[in-house]
Length: 429
Ligand code: GDP
Ligand code: IMO
Ligand code: MG
Image (cartoon, rainbow, N blue to C red; front, side, top):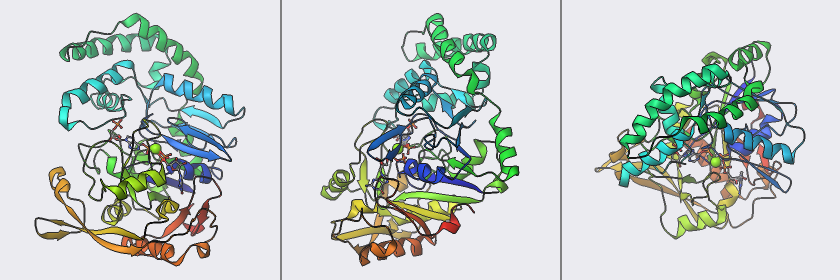
C-alpha cells in the first residue's frame, strides 16, 4: 500500500507544491484533502512558473489523476478559472475529479470573511479573504452546500434558497445589504453545469486504489501550526492541514497511510497575524525576505521571516508522526555568517520544550538559541550531499538530531532538479 502524505511542517508556504510536483510524477493519484484557494502552491518547470490554488500541484503530470477531496472547500469560479488558465498553457493535463462531499464557497462566504475580519479589529487573523473560514463554519453548522448537491439543479435551487435566507439575516446583522437570489443563482448554476462531469465518488475510488496497491499521494495545504486543533488558535485556518486531516478529508483510513513527509523551510515564515517566537522583525528578517523573495503566492503579502524554530519543528514531527523531513530553501541562507536556531523557550523564568497551548503564553515565550556556523557558498548547483559546504551539512545533521527525524529530501532551488533525495526508502513506505 504505497501511500504518502506530504504536509507543511510549519506555518505554510514550505514549498509543498514543488515537492508534490516532483514526487507526483511517481503517483497514480494526487489528492488535496483540506483548505481551498487560500493555498498557493508553486511549481517551476524549466523557466515556467505555475501557481496552483485549488488544483493539485501534480496536475501537470498527464498520467496522474488529480482529486479534490471531501475535506476541501471549493470556489467553483476559482476552480474553473484555474483549470482554464492551466489548460491554455498545457494541452494535456492529468484527469481531474472532485468529491461530492467537498463544500462550495459562495460570494456570501467571501463577504462574511471580510466582515468578520473587520469586526475582529486589532485581533484580526489576517485571512486570505477567500471565504474559507465562513465556508467551514457552514459545514460545522450543518448548513453547507456540498458539491454533490450543487451539481443537481433542483436540489441546488432548494438548498441555495434556504441557506441564502439565513446568510442574509447574518449580513443584515453586520449592517450589510442582503444578496439577491437570482443573479447569484444563475451565475453559480452555470459553474455547476461546467463542473458536473468532474464530480465522482472519490472516497470509493481511493479506497479501491489503496486496496489495489496504487500509489496515492495526499497533498497537504497550509501548515501544521495553522491547524484548527493543533495550531496557534485562534490564529489558524479553519481546517486540518496536519497528516490526520488526510484521512478525514479523503475517506482513506489511518492504517492505509504508509509514509508522512513534513516539508519545512530551513528557516521560518508566517503570513497573517499570530505569535511567531523566532520572528526577526529586523535586518536579519528583512534579509531573509529579500534573499528568499518571501512574498505570498496567494495574496502577495510580505511574509514574516525568522530563524528556524526547532522546538516547533520537533513538535510538528511528533504530531504528524513524520517518517522524514523535506528541508527546503537551504540555499536562501547562504551568506549569513551565523545561523541561530531555537532549541528551547523560556517562559516566566522556566525553560520549556514545546509550544504552550495558550496563545498569550506563546506570545510571551523567549526563544533559547543555539548558534550554528553559516556558509558563503551558493548552493543551487549542488546535486549530492557531498557538494554542500561542511557548515551546511552540519546544519542538516543538527536538525535531524534535534527533531529525531531523518531528512529524506533536500531542496536547494525552485526547479525540479534542484532536489537531493537522501532517503528514498522513506518516501513510499
Ligand atoms: P507551498 O505553499 O508550500 O507550496 O509554497 P509556495 O509555493 O507558497 O512558496 C514556496 C516558494 O519557494 C515558491 O516560490 C517556490 O518556487 C520556491 N521554492 C521551492 N523550493 C525552493 C528551494 O529549495 N529554494 C528556493 N530558493 N526556492 C524554492
Ligand atoms: P499554503 O498551502 C500560508 C494563513 C493566512 C491567515 C490564516 C487564516 O500556500 O501553504 P484563511 O484564509 O485560511 O482563513 O487564513 O492562515 N494561511 C496561509 N499561510 N500559506 C497558506 O497556504 C495559507 N493558507 C492560509 O495568512 O494567517
Ligand atoms: Mg503557498
